[in-house]
Image 1 (cartoon, rainbow, N blue to C red):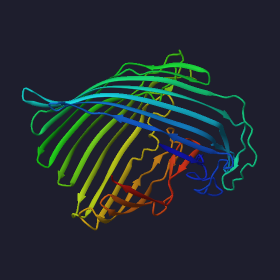
Image 2 (cartoon, helix red, strand yellow):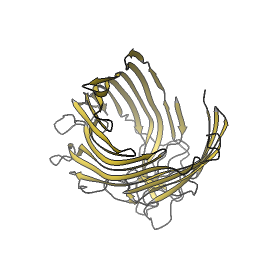
Image 3 (tube, rainbow, N blue to C red):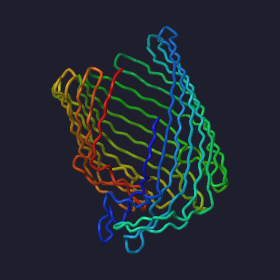
Image 4 (cartoon, helix red, strand yellow):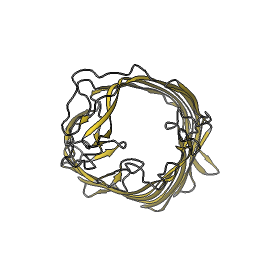
Amino acid sequence: YQRRDTLPNPGLPVVGTVRSNGVGRVSRSTYLGEPEFDSLTTWSPLVQAWLEFDLGEHWTLSPRYQFFEFNVNQQQMRLRAPEPDGVTIRRTGRFKFHERDKTDTFQLELKGKLDTFGMPHELLLGYEWEHHRWTGDWFDFASPPAINALNPVYQSTPLAVDPTQPTFSGRGYTPSYYVQDLMHLTDTVTVLAGVRHSRPDFKSEFAGDTARGPIDDNTSWQLGSTWQFRPDWSLFAGYGTGFTTEAVIGGIDRNGGAFEPEETRQWEAGIKHQQGASTLTLAAFEITRKNVTTTDPVDPDFSIQVGEQRVRGAELEFTQELTRSWFLQGGVAYLDGEVTRSNDGDTGNQLPNVAPWQANLWTLYRFDANLTGLEIGLGGNFVGHRYGTLDNSYKLDAYTTVDASAAYQLTPKLKTELFLRNVLDERYYTGNNNFSVYPGEPRGWYLRLTMSL
């Protein structure tokens, strides 16, 4: 069970943070909501249960169940475009926003091993059924006042509220069947093949408008292989497809028809070296997202599913055991993410918050190689320049954060850990929309105590 009670984060204006307003820079700690009235409470119960029956001869049957809720009570302000002075920020907001989401997941899996003509197989057969339902409502604030980003003055009396109460709700079912087979063709060559068939069926309502969909049969495929051509070296390659309904639930085209699920396809190939605790992996990949909604050229008030986005890249990862007590791990990645097809005039644009260059490095030293006593860690994370929104209207600077940790094994079952976040207090932002950005976490720390029973 998780619960959070805090102020919502309206972000900071694009102008005055990542763009100059010609007057002064907005402080990272500035709050541009209404602290007297804003609130955010979320709570999420999670229940999981599963059994495993040993059927003998390397076969098991596993029924599983999960129930998850996500609940929100919120009162928030949202930033909009600045006034001509570049400092006064217009705002909108929601009053008494409520959302209740619930998901039940049932799963039954049969796993086992068998040989056919001398070829070992590791088989997985399963059935999964998901039931989603959600509901919510809110009121809009009626013309909330703008606020000065450099010298905010907060309201002392409640803001006027629009009496209209928009609502949203929905329900969906997604049954799925899947089969996976890991085949050992030889001692050095394996092939993984899988297929999953799903039929999502959703109904939703938003502000009184109802829609049914997506409703569609979808089959996803997975095929991969590994060849260990030397004792310490392996080649691997794989291809897979998938789908998601999250971005299109409740959407309809100009004819009132429901959208199909968005589809993805991905391939990856690479080489891996492993010797003891030291590894080195180099891979190249491409991920394509299809059926993305984009403006309908016949009626711009509606959308059609002809959009496409793609990410191509390569990554290098390594772990190195320098001594029995000293470990090093890190990686570097290059990502080229762009809009490859769209009716919104953004074809060729870079995908938001996807930095072409990213890298990380972390080192850990244990004063006792037997995993007791004190250990310390130090690492850095680099994120390169990237755009904040899909229309590439502004760019976010590159940044590097440094983190540290210390841990001590008090007893064989009790461990205490101290984590230091953003030690150098690097100032950075992530994009959100054309009006606001979110500052990254400032310097901070937290302590954790872990007990093993």
